[in-house]
Amino acid sequence: MNLTGIIGYTITPFTENNNVDFKQLETVIDTLLDAKVDAIAALGSAGEAAYLSEDEWESVASHTVSYVAGKVPVVVGIAELTTAQAVKRAKYAHKIGADVVMLSPFSYYKLNEDEIFLHYKSVSDATPLPIMIYNNPATCGVDMSPQFMLKMVDGIENARWIKESTGDIQRMHKIYKLSKGSVPFFNGCNHMALEALNAGAVGWCTIAPCLIGDQPKQLFDAIKNSNNEKARELFYQQYEFLEFIVQSGLAAAVKAGMSAQGIQVGHPRKPLLPLTPLKQEKLKSMLIDLGCFS
Image (cartoon, rainbow, N blue to C red; front, top):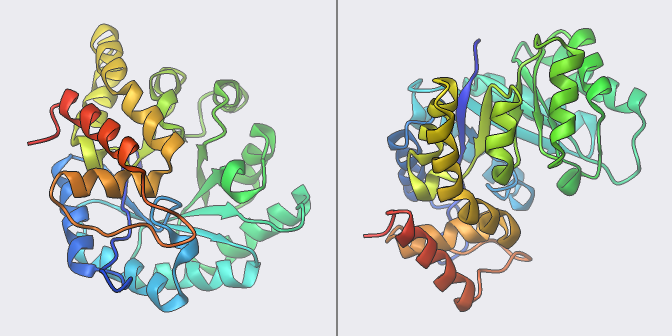
């Protein structure tokens, strides 16, 4: 599978009774498809996967795959404390027809590289699905070096891609240089999109299309077509917004933005809190400036 471009993340909408709202999940998926994303990722941190019950997690995964219906590849995020639970969820993702698993090593105890390697290998051995190695120490508590992630790509059969989300552009330069450009990697840090794509990232994993449509795709295409002036213009138009949604919390920010746009997707699940009224107004102002508010 040649996975490139914009991977759009879904949020998990909730009803007033705090149940998963599957009808509005379909609306979110339609929004991403309309934004011309190249793949859809469910159950990431923006999707509040850590706050879902097991039944909810499985229902969101299966409903996403079913509703997307092969229009684009579906990536299922997995971040579990135990290898057994990660394997269980990877098997479930394969069973329902997902195309890729995005696997993060989640830890309470500090994991060493042997433990992380075996965690990934165990998931790889359990299912034929290709794996994206996801490095996001801010949420998972594990920081993997470029050298180690490349070792896993080389030594684990189904490990295919790397998603780098530390916010350190030097990590991406290292991945590109050490692999001689042979290992595809994705940017997972929204406000670094311009630098990352210019550093050789084959794509950008982002929830931004939920609110600003195909503007991330336009940026990706501009860089792909070597239109650097256009790319800079597009990036700096989006920059303040991209920085804001990260700093404000992706789930809370996107849910507030979609609500302002007339799509009721509920609040984040506690302990996460909705945006304050002041931040809601700031977000609305940015969406107006980006032409994404009617």
